[in-house]
Image 1 (cartoon, rainbow, N blue to C red):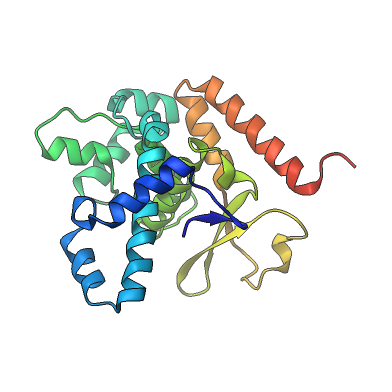
Image 2 (image 1 turned 90 degrees about the vertical axis):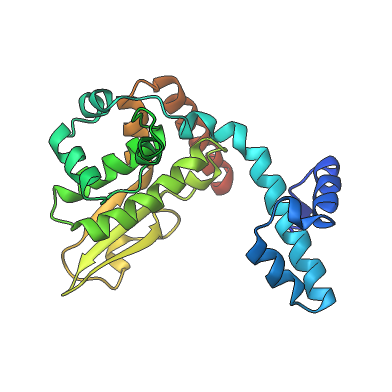
Length: 237
């Protein structure tokens, strides 16, 4: 069940909705998930359906918060001017299918190509990493992970409390590792090659928002993040 500590993160009304959904899984689960549930033992099936229903409730609860992040709104020229990424670079990535963007999904359906803030974060990460020699296959995966962290800014941003960073290394093969720059953590303590690329997840998201005219949101996110970090460390001591 969805809990934080010993308490459910769902309100009583949301718990009631989850209970109703669990009794009618066809209404929100895929056919594959329903078939998987049907093959489970009864007690495990009940736990599985309850958990899936609670996840569905949380998704519905957060959907309005994510709308500003997911909504297509920027033209290609706005993205290139705001982020400083050459238009030809973005067009090359799109033509070769090297970035998974919502703008391309809309284009495939015959609509205008408009980019969301999520798309912008992915493009920003890809551009920054490509400039230091990280290959497409690697920065594509990293960009997707950072984009998911971007969702947390619109939900809290609880996910930014521990300052996530991505460390990329190339010791004969490129690898990426997620760490958190908090507490006693020191980058030099990691078992990595002498040379590495470090991507500050929070900073790239904030810079993307700022570059595209969301300064007020940047201030709010930064203030919430700092307040949460202070509460974790007990404030000023």
